[in-house]
Length: 288
Image (cartoon, rainbow, N blue to C red; front, side):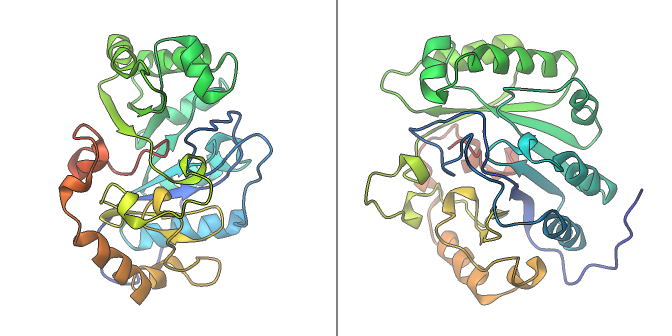
């Protein structure tokens, strides 16, 4: 069923992708770098299903062409498919950023829909090293097998590699992905956000890649609006209190955007991180 929209509430915003952190629950426990501190015992956050629907509808009214369902692990959110279907019915593209630890057979049909893409994280071609990072036995084989299945089905997929451990087999992980047929691969260092921050370390905007708010925005599981999922400690309001279209037209968002426009592109730590090249990606890799 198609949801009818009123005309845009204002001129389209300059956002190419809106990240929706629909849950903090995850099968993995990446203790060394997870930006959201997600894990098996975490919940879905303060946002309700109707509130997520409202955010997607507002995004469509604003002319935002894509939403990204992330987490945690977005497929653990009970109504994630309903949210994806809603976005597609409004002609909004959907990227599902999943750890691909578990893919139910019936999900593949949705992943193969026009307008849907997949994203995932990959750490090493060595199962032991991959699982040392994810803290979940069997995660390497499951993720690898589901990447191979996505490629076999012709589903657009991109992979992000985070350099977490000293001497990590990043180059070998990239080579393995390429051998499997994955062509969109980006890498980055760990950034001091979430579990990657040292005890007592206060996050700073300068720790970001420099592209937050520039073509992207994020709504966190708390309802906070941020420049991306990594700049979560610097919200520009909350969609549970104020509608998304009002926040994106408000002074806090303008001030946050102004800060990032003053940063040089060289603030990016890695030249092959697609976060430094908005033309080739639509959102921050949530694994960073």
